[in-house]
Image (cartoon, rainbow, N blue to C red; front, side, top):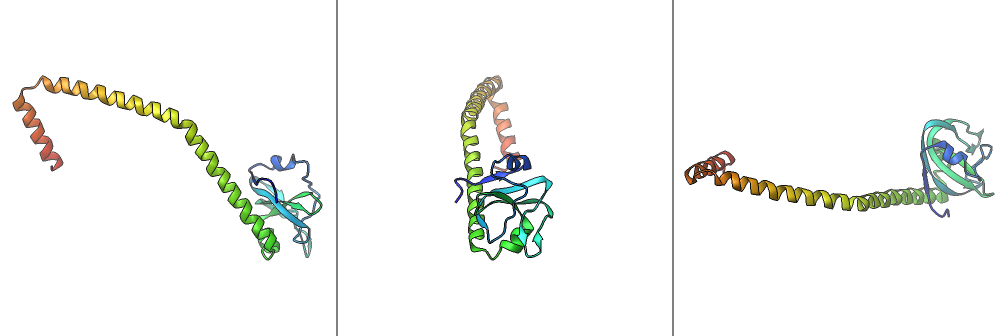
Length: 163
């Protein structure tokens, strides 16, 4: 099993991996495990070998797999469903990779929130200070009115809000 699953959003990330080969073929027979999932904006060529030879169809999403000889190859989304759907090992690997990628995204989001907690605390403190200042100003403002006018304003507010 791969150490940690990866999500690839750019083909260059995969192409630069030392074990990746554009010439490699992958099939249920030589499939070992999955490294990760990918979704690209550009088309890439599927490397799945089926009954009629290598697929060579262009696709934008799929899986990066490792063969039994340690080479990495692309498994297009359609070929994964067509050729690997009956393969129990592939299905377990697919579920594992999806879970690990989802977990990593969640952890990254939590770290992002934790990093911003100080900023939010400072903002909250500033809002509290502003509220206190506004209440003081309102108290001074209302202090300039006679009691009869304040009672009229209070009564009008109750009528408007329905209290």
